[in-house]
Length: 236
Image (cartoon, rainbow, N blue to C red; front, side, top):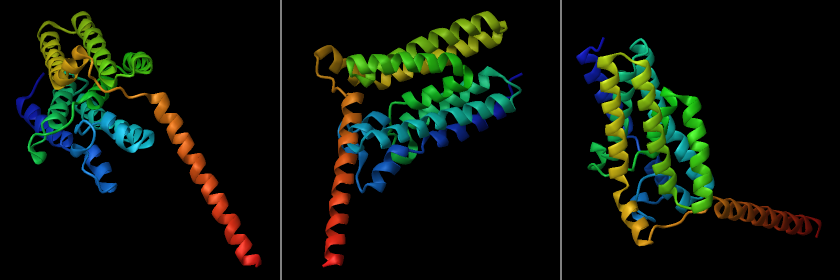
């Protein structure tokens, strides 16, 4: 049974959780403004592009948790009602994409969307994420991986809802899934246009990883040289 005042509390709480921008927090720690770097998007791909693999993955994990925790809590506290899960999830995504505290200028909600689907169906979500990462490695487009995730997961969870839920609940769940699907694609409309024009920015995970390894090697080599020079001075 759906209690409307519960829904209102979930919507408000989850929306403001979505307002937490880890991309901005990470960039602020680097004394930078993520909205003025790269694509200007406050999301994991832009963090990866500008601050490297570690911070990109960190931001991705935090944004996934931002979607996962409210959705799972709403699901469990409601007696495992999927309507509550997807209401919380949709609210987090809206808060991430259109945060009131940042004048409605947010990210694109992919990581938070993955967190929501992880709460609903962890096995299917992890499999789809794996497939999306392979597509990213092949095509080097983060947006293509995003489209794969949201499209496949929406279809899977919609089919499951039709098969396993009662008449009123399954229609509501499918509607919420459709809204999440549309919201995610709408947030990527600029990416779609750039893909069609052949102007979409590529982000190579392999190159980023190799670059980070080289940087770490240089830092270790530099530290070793400094240590040797210090030792020579002490001996002298």
